Length: 569
Image (cartoon, rainbow, N blue to C red; front, side, top):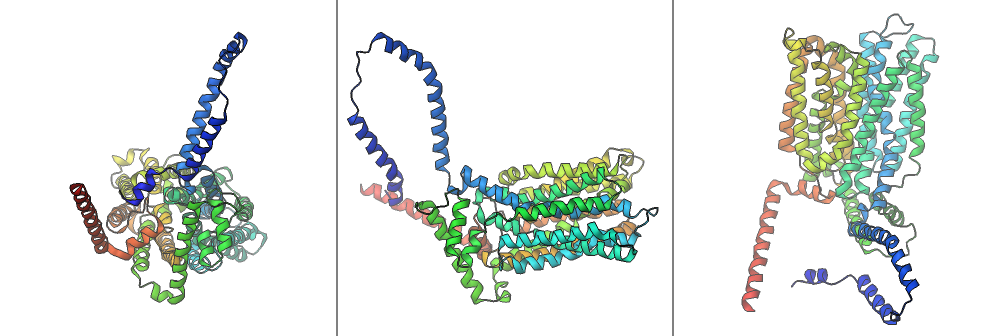
């Protein structure tokens, strides 16, 4: 019998101690007197029925406590509640990013109305809709600079402040009387909103990944997608009820962004980042909070100390690596350049398959696709469908895994786009189905949320080593947002050149190619620790095969040794 097996058979020290105490108490307890009178017997019978319910409740409570104590510290009820609360506060500003994304969809009809005192021509409207995506890459570069320097919390706070400035510029733009000044300030406000979007893609996800354990990591990282979806839906709802008042919409958004900025203040800093900066005491306090322990440090919890020691070793290695090599040297390591190329490709397919185009131009696409109901109502339906689907994505990712969900998502998106294209190619048959455009557009949003829209934002927080997590995720966002800007800017020209039906077919082809890309290059990260994911990239396929072969050989050797022991006996 091995030492590990003997340790498993031995009772925990505290249980042995409790058993000893209980035996001593039993010895000192007086024997029960059997000569009770009839009154006490009847009282005991009367009490029995009332005590049985309390006993059953006590048993259930003990069973729950026993089950709770068997979980790791980071998965217990109080710890999960604290993690979810802080991730919620961090993602409150992401909701403002979603409002920036979908604002053109509900305001362009008013802004392009030539009967209004201020209106935009086609080219000006395309710049208004897409300039935030042109500024997004700048946000990606900024987050790569700030995330590892000022920390996760203050990067999130800075991002909220930048978004607040953007909404303030939009809300006050019509105070000018000169048309050029109004348009210029609107573009600057949209650009600040784009910087906020680019900066918000990764910091909350990185924060979520660093404070949680693998089992609930996906659920917490998904909070960024839920925040984005909620912001898009909120803007659609505002546009539905406020049809002709851009200033009021911007003012409401500005007030919300101010509240989101204040909500960041109570968030503790990530313990991983604090350890990397050598702030061990602050890191200990932060990790104790996220593991559901009390603030005072006078108790010794072995599981907590082991996790803190492991995190400190990882942080020390990351700090030593970062100090001994430049960015150019770091990017040559396989655990850096492999996930970087994969994420750039993933973001590229995400943008090229038309996901963001449909979100931004939802009302306009619904009109051109032949939707007969109110197109703004269709946009609201899209927002509702997306946020409902996002809430279920945590369980889907945990049951299916990342890769199957992504392949299913991309394939179904391609089918939806082909059906929309068929409506334009066959106007006398498929084109007569008035329900088809609405169903296909809503289904496209639902299926995109199941993978292509959410997976890149989840995996960007998982696949990079800690030493370059901030810079590498920022570079990925930089390239992804450049592609988003290009796709949004050329959408009106592509529609005019290819036609609506052929453009939908183009998006379908890209979606099917995205499914092949996920199958070939995207790894499965479900249930893996961040260190295990880093090892996946470092070792490569050949290294992993060799490791599995070595593990199998060691297992066979152990079986042979055990067999020899039994023979000797």
